Length: 348
Image 1 (cartoon, helix red, strand yellow):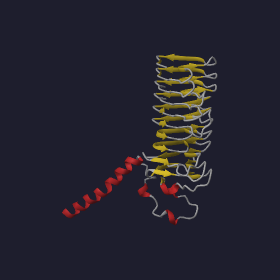
Image 2 (cartoon, rainbow, N blue to C red):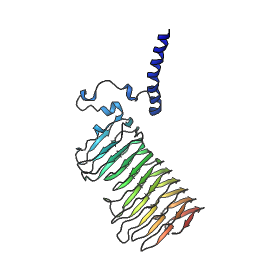
Image 3 (cartoon, rainbow, N blue to C red):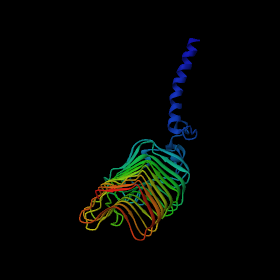
Image 4 (spheres, one colour):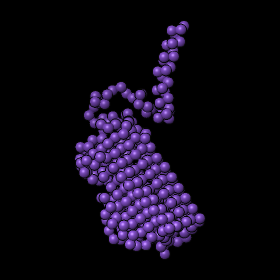
């Protein structure tokens, strides 16, 4: 009897940690737990068969730096939940390469707290960290860090609906940190940070932009930070640039310490809204310590026939221009029906 009890305790001690790990990482999803994968090794599979579609785990070996120009290192073409296995680095040898592309609707990419970083040793430009193909729906990118992309951190192509970005950090990109294409309606971003985009390879119009979205409806951004996006040469800078968007809501967000390039006339914006957008809502947002090297600075900028909006308990402090004007809040004559409540503009 004593031996039997010892055996049973040993079995329980072996099983319980695995089950606990399963519940912790995968929330009880029985179909994707890696310990229950098919036993075949990926090296034995038929040519063209994609191990990622079965395992749901993304490992370093699938991010090939030799990917051809304008190609994709790893294309997720089957719906499901995908996970990073570890911190990963890339160094594309060719321009305009996408590291991970989501090409199927109903897909979640959970980075599980890991990072995807580019070393830029090969000096390839136009790299995209994570890309969502056009016209998808129900896509989620979450819980990770993208760093050092010589291009764009996250790119959402036009026509995709119901995309969510949650608990992501996008750092030190040379174009835009996160960019969302036309008609990407019902877009949500929360608990995320976009910082240190330098605009090295951006046009002067875009410059160094943390988050850019255009011609979209039903946008919700909350608890996000768009700070320290600074252009070193010729180009504007903005924490947030929303163009021609309708029903855009920003709650508890910041745009601090963004700075335009050194060329005369380059402009810095904390939050920029223009292009005939409608029904803008800003709540408890801050745009402070934004500066320029030789141009205007705006904490909050609303222009170009924006019709209807509320700015509530927002602060624009210590925005300082060099060689031109600085504004806490600015509204053009073509902006109508804007309501400000309990806002502050101090030391601009």
